[in-house]
Length: 102
Image (cartoon, rainbow, N blue to C red; front, side):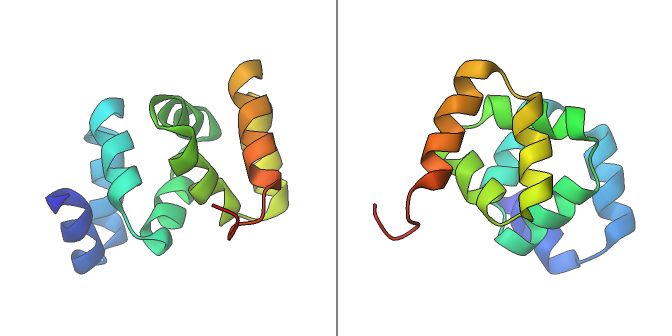
């Protein structure tokens, strides 16, 4: 996605924060999905837990697992605790799989 590539290339946290504030959740979830892991972590760190969870609820579980799997365990648990029960159970099961099993 061009926006994700632009944000990665620009590497400007002020512009990133402005984008995070202005973008609607559907666009932001797509950009998050298409971004490299480093930018994904930066984006997540600059969003509230509630907003990040809203974005995760718009994304396919396998993409959410990739992002959550790159976070520290305590952060991962906080995000999971905010998710809907069905989603949380599926994500926890998927996170327990070996990353190379697929």
